[in-house]
Amino acid sequence: MSDRWGREQVLGLAPDAASAKAAGGVAKPVKWSGTGSDGEAVWGECQGSGKSVYRTCADLTEPAFRCSCPSRKFPCKHAVGLLLLWSDGTVPAGPRPGWAAEWLHERRQRADKAAERRADTKAKDPKTAERRERRVDDGLAELDQWLRDQVTHGLAQAEKAPYRMWDDVARRLVDAQASALAGQVRGLAAVPRQPGWPDRLLEEYALMRLLVRAYQERDRLPPELRDTVRSRVGFTLAQDEVLAEGERVRDRWYVTGTHDTEQDRLTTRRIWLRGRESGRPALVLSFGVPGRPLDVSLVVGTEVEAELAFYPGAQPLRALVAERLGTTAGTAPHGTSVREFLAEHAAALARDPWLARWPAVLRSVRLARSGPTALHVVDADGDSLPLRPTDPWRLLAVSGGAPFTFAGEWGPRGLRPLSAWHEDEGIVIL
Image (cartoon, rainbow, N blue to C red; front, side, top):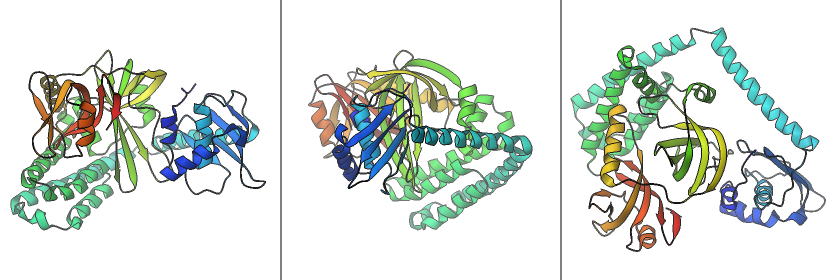
């Protein structure tokens, strides 16, 4: 049974502002007939222009959508409008009509067949994994030589190097099936355009070579660290494997913030959670390609009672929602002091030196200026952390000079603000 989504969650599915506005125009009961829902899906028929009637259905488990209208936007205004009606509680429960049941059944069949094909591939070709290991070994040996060449010849050439220098190396890593490392190499192209880039680039080279050496010595590593190294190189686990074998943690998880990034037409949404009882951080990832929406079921500021399954590793952080029991509006999460946060981050880095970001939830912090637009957050003990360069005015307006609870992503360039809680303003998404 799917929890009923809020109006903001539904509007977040719209591909653009115009679609969201148009959805509001069709989210009127008088325009619909045959609407219904059963906890896993919502369906209905919308009266279009003239005699046209559009059959619309939404699978709430992914989500996924189908509509018979000619719109090229996905989801279309009818799908979003139908979900708005469902969100408002005006869609009754009932049995699925034949056309909706057929579409949902076909979706389930396709998913089952895809899982069977993956299982058959593994069963029929036991040497596939061995061949991939050899390809990755060769690709990382080539990367190791490239990294040594960069240091030997000096970093000055990197400042004016064309993007092709990094992209060629990344493409060879993709061919070697080390896709995660390929993405890291492509990211290096932006480093020489940042202040203080030589130190940062040398640090990135060193971490990359440490990963290469760790992979080459993987048989000598503890099992948890070996899992981390393999995932950093590009070996992934299927979700069903994580759900079956991953560590399970049940808690009330506060959704502290989200951030979207885009690369090669793939949008990645990072959703940060923190356990109310365990205090444990968790990261849920959602991926979207053109035509497929990102996950909107975890809303910042809500509290989700759920059991998470964590991906294996020396510092388990990424997780899947294995079982969801309910969602409520949350109060401010329990934060830490700056010193406690830094100690937590240092311990995480000791377990996984390649951590690119770590979630922070800081209690009772104030804002302090360190320049015309540069800001720090300062806790009650006087300890501070720098914020990433950003527009400071909204955060200044939220705080009003008073202490507040702050959530963000900590990385090499400082804290990226994600959300804040103020006793008068409530939660504000930054």
